[in-house]
Image 1 (cartoon, rainbow, N blue to C red):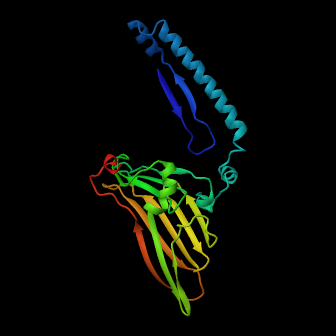
Image 2: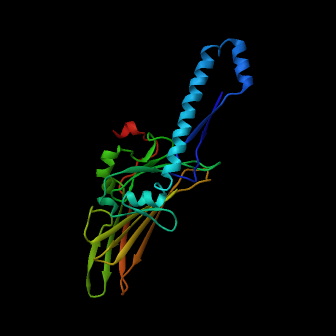
Image 3: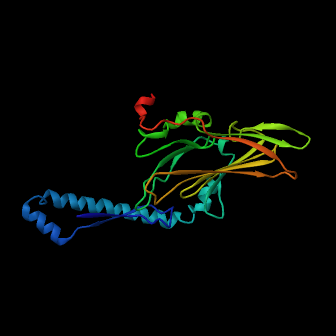
Length: 257
């Protein structure tokens, strides 16, 4: 007896379909040993009936709901939109209801994966490490604590922006939630997470891109920071950037409690 799970990845709104395949040879072999008759046959029939019902329900939902659950409409109904690359765009992400997710832990056929946990607070990345949460490079905390601590314990960026005849300004992008002087956006892709902020006072845009590296013999997380001057005059920018807290190698989660 084989249970086949079919998932159409090209249609995000379509539900999984289940099919049951029972070969005549399997039934004969099992009944010859006395393990399938009569209870095995009855169980197989019940399973087939249940799976057939699932297929019917999934078929009706997909036929009636495909037009209602297109990706663009799903993005719009959740308060966001899709960009030209198919990424989910969420404006003012740090003022929305809190949510958490992971970057795909995929290393490729020969690579080694890394897990990365992010939230819609601070600079997003709240924890990352190798193998399990017991081997973190940045300590893993539950989502309810990560919402509070991500902007303090995670990555941080401090800028000192100077322009001619203007007093230097100190800015910390993504730090103060709901700041009226900052326009913030989060973009979520298949294997990337990008956040950006435009500071109105300094006319400096900070863009941070996260993604994991596949097909390498070591796990890796890339964080790419880009600063853009949106003003009409040149600006001198001094930068302090990095991780506020980093766990030493060999320290497990139990030692961090």
